[in-house]
Length: 79
Image 1 (tube, rainbow, N blue to C red):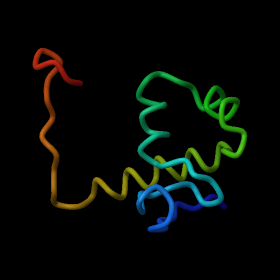
Image 2 (cartoon, helix red, strand yellow; image 1 turned 120 degrees about the vertical axis):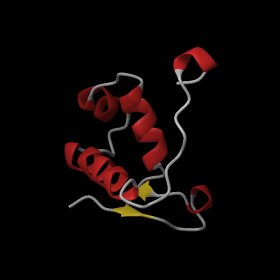
Image 3 (tube, rainbow, N blue to C red; image 1 turned 180 degrees about the horizontal axis):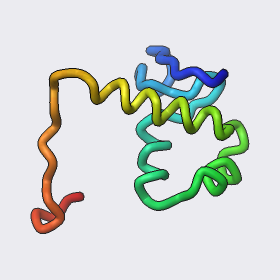
């Protein structure tokens, strides 16, 4: 089972997929840019479908907290 871990010595302690130096943030950005799971796995062979699901699960759990980040609209120059 893929796990999300954090180690202060890897990427400054950002959450990563265990056994890689690939951050949850990076994988989410790839998905948001429109890459399919298959394309991501092709580009990063250490990842699996299970690890991508672990990233999405981690992101979902992270959003359960009470702190919300304001969303900037496209017309403000950011998406």
